Length: 383
Ligand SMILES: Cc1cc2nc3c(=O)[nH]c(=O)nc-3n(C[C@H](O)[C@H](O)[C@H](O)COP(=O)(O)OP(=O)(O)OC[C@H]3O[C@@H](n4cnc5c(N)ncnc54)[C@H](O)[C@@H]3O)c2cc1C
Image (tube, rainbow, N blue to C red):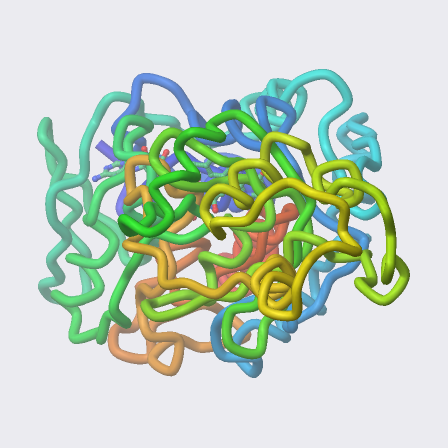
């Protein structure tokens, strides 16, 4: 049983582990339903964990700028890298701006496991409810009840239930009068409607694209998949999509003008995988012939590859989504301390809040930055 003055942290993922590491020894109890800490960290970033990004700012997030900004400023990517350096972790830069662990995400998890050992860690216990009576929180698990005057909800979103995700964070928030902004899977692949079923025949093929969703432009690889489409550009685009059409430029750095009058076959002319060109030619009912032989209407059809517009059927769902967008309404949480404006002593961190980052290390950065803000506030209360 935790001592009354120990802070209870619900969840043992990224934000909880950063908070447990930053707080003084023996001040917190971390309750994690899995038998191990940080399960998501281990599988993140293709097993290498994309920790943060050199390009950092509120513009890389979906959520309220005024809420996100103070935490991102007080613990930005540079502060995080300095903290990691002190723990002897030197992430490596990949894809120009993204910081990853050198060999494996375990390097980061090992640091957190070591650092958080100074707190009381409880594994394999699932929090089922939180109540408050006489200024004391009662945190009930499937095994016992813990009490404290401070509770931090760091239980993440709904994505990847097989790694321990649950709706407990939202339930606790609602119990204390919070509003939940509608949640949806994000950083996730799209399923397609019948007109795009031919994508499935290209399963496994990847091509560079620009995807436009509303005013947002997402650049990167599109991976055709058995269920529709995936890959970095698609995951990024999913953050901004609710329903309706998206526009894909399959020829992002290509100018049709530069090939005017070309005698080359279409499939040799276009800078995209031949299999993709051929599948589109079939779909557009075009023959693979020398470009200069195309009639005006055939040219028009072919040029749609630069602005191929359609409505995805949906997403691959929470089972495959890297994050959950939506969550605890941030107008009801203090932007400096992460404490609830509805309930004294109740805090929210990381993904459970209505803050979602783009692909590229932004979600871990948010988990760590919000944990830092909370740690400052809690340390002030302890001392
Ligand atoms: C496959 C995958 C790859 C990803 N790759 C990246 C990446 O490279 N870079 C990046 O920035 N982000 C990545 N993300 C997103 C990132 O992992 C999350 O945004 C981040 O972990 C959120 O931190 P958190 O602390 O809020 O929640 P989590 O890390 O999800 O931690 C929440 C913890 O709470 C526990 N929990 C839930 N319910 C209960 C309960 N009732 N009782 C007790 N414990 C409970 C869960 O088991 C979990 O351990 C990835 C996500 C996935 C799924």
